[in-house]
Each structure stands twice: as C-alpha cells, then as structure tokens.
Image (tube, rainbow, N blue to C red; front, side):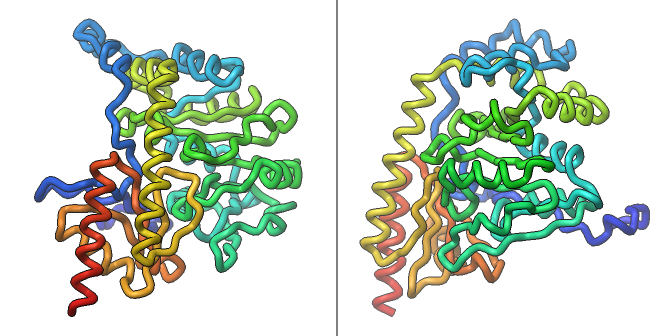
Length: 357
C-alpha cells in the first residue's frame, strides 16, 4: 500500500475472485463458469470485419443489445440497462440507490461483493442472518429502511425463494429499491420478472456469464421500470459511458437470440447437477437443494478445506471459505458429464484413503 491511498480506503478488503492457477491443467469447478463454449452464432458474429472496427468507439447506448434482451423478455429497450458484467451493474446500483441515509440490507451469507460495494461506497450495511438450514427469513427484510439486495437463487447456498416471498419483500419496501440478483435463476429459480409491471421499486440484475457462456465477455444487464433505468444511466454516463465494447455487444446479441443453444446448455447443467448430487449423497455428503449451477456440500468426516486441498492435488478445483458460517461447506460448480465423473472418482479415492489411514 502506498502513502497516497486515502485513509477511508486503507482498510478496504477487496473482493477475492476464484483462483485461476496456471501451474497445470485443472478441471475447473470453482468459479461457476459455464463448461460450454459460447453459442456458434457468437463465433460467427465475431468476424475479421468486426474486429477491424475496433478503432471506433462502441454505441454508448448499447441499443442493439438492449433490444435483443428486451425482445427475449417481452419488454421495451427502455426497461433494459447493460453493464460491463453484472458486477458493474451491482456497483452502479449501490452508487445510485444507497448512501448514509439509505443503507444496504442483504443476507449475512450471500455474494461477497455486496459487502465490498457497501464498504467501497461508504454505505452503511445491515445483514440478515440465515437460519441454520441456510434458508432466508423474509420478515427482517420487510420495511428494511434501505436498499434490499438479495441473490435469488442465493450464492453460495444455491437456495431459492419462491416468487410469492420475493413479492412480499418488494411490496414490503415501497419507498426503497429492492434489487434481486438473478445470476443463477435460469437453472431452476423463479424470476421476479412477472412483478416488474406493478412494482416500480424492483430492479432485477442478470448476467451473461453463467447460462449464456460469456464470462470472458463481461456482460450483465438490469431489468426495471424506465425511471430506474434512467437513474442507472445517469450514474454510468458520469463514470463510464462506453462500458460495453463492440465485440462483447455482438456476442451478447447472438447469445441472447440463440434460444435453442441456451436451453440445451441449461438442461445439461441441471441434469449433471442432479446426477452429481445423488452420487455425492451416496458417498455421505449432505447438501442444500441447489437451484443454481453449483452444489453447496459438506461431509461429516472431511472439512471443506481438506476436501479442496485433496482435490487440487488431484487436478480438480472447487471453492471453500474460512468464514465460520461457510467453512464446513464446499461449493462445487457443475461442469460437463466427464468433468463431474472425474470429480466423483477423485472424491471416492480421497474418502477411501482417509478410511484406510
């Protein structure tokens, strides 16, 4: 740390993304990326001609991409905001809708970036503890007195609130934005989209990184009523007006339009999630009823840290935490059938070695 960083940020703890080691070839099940490549239509769109246009700025309104998203969900482009990954959308939302007088309220166990954004923008934060089974109680989020932020399905637990409970939260905070982070909703959660027409305080945030196979393109978007979208654009254009690059915009358009490929990838991931869950349960693991593209699993004789370390030695990456609320559970991203078979095979070997020793 230099001597020039302002004191208010000296204690800032930045977000720690999943590791990306390069010392060997790993089966990567640690960052919830899609195991599948982008749609073939994406590859076709990224032509030499388009690359030659990188000397020009991208469309600051991202209108072609907003239109493709709007068409998919039966909305107007005025209801769509595009960001450089959903993390940018989340960050701009904290900047636009939360401050010292409007704190952020979110689950105590959830996506780690929420707390980071609150600290970065000096927004007071109040967290709502989960129950022992990792479910989220709704009552503490009613009349929250600030911007409510919740991932649905939640990360890293994978648990999803039904639409009726989301509606209670949105309608229970009429004077505040309720941000529903739907990064994983395509894998089995219920979207809050049906509430949009009647709830002016609802802000839905989604990503292209998971179900659309575009993590490297850095594309995210928000769905909301037009005045809320205008608010986000006011902040964005005061910070980063050309936030979507030309190639990512083209990739996003084609990924959104290729419904058949999207559905095929999602169905494969859901199928592998259920098959892997059954196999791990047979090996003694317990886990939540994940509605996401990952499993949140624990074993009575194997700590999450030791499981992670043993798998890494065998060339498989998963995610674990030192947080007391999470340290018994590992998060396992869902990969291809071959990748999940490898995970189960190595897990059997690890458990067998522990039994013998």
